Length: 272
Image 1 (tube, rainbow, N blue to C red):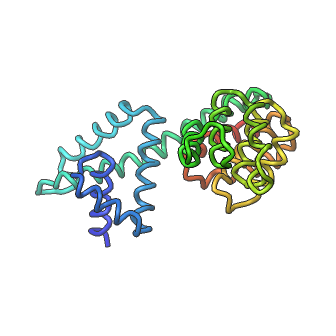
Image 2 (tube, one colour):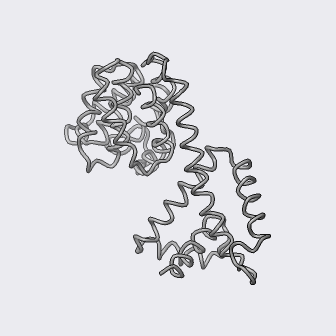
Image 3 (cartoon, one colour):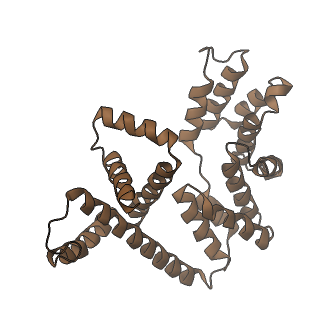
């Protein structure tokens, strides 16, 4: 079992460090699509690398390597024989996992102590953590730009144009396009989501919050977590019930988005 895990980890490390040939990479990605265990281990390593980035890449790697080299010089890991390079890489990543966890914990404790006597400023927190996911919007534009007509009577083209206007900061024009489509399209979850984001950008929380609340409550909606994130930021901005804010923020502890996990914990620290 341990040998199988080592093989999986070796493949993942080579994949993440771009050491695979094109053929190996294609084969690995094919296996990745079918193997839940492999997907889980890959996500774990991505979180490790993201944590290293957040903690300070060069400093953390240097510290881990120093301890690792000292132990290796004493034959701590493989007494009497030279360890294969692939095994050494796996061990280094495992060291990083524990180091990242420790650094994040220490950082969070320091952050909590600093905030312990500081009053909560909802508007300031909102301004710090509210941001548009431009990459997500561009992906939606690409997926919905079908005919090339700008604008057009084709619903997906009009939707793509509305998203482009949103990125350009032309929120009222974007709202007009989203609300002028047929009932079936205007009421679709994805159209409602970006309608809410336009109103949010205009600081019209009275309109945007109920829409985001409905989408947040639908776990099948593909951007369900994003809707919940924007919703809780509105609650924070409006200084709504603290217990509701804390409850929703705690839901992000299991998020697959490392940035969101860290951000939610930092915001929670204000309410301790």
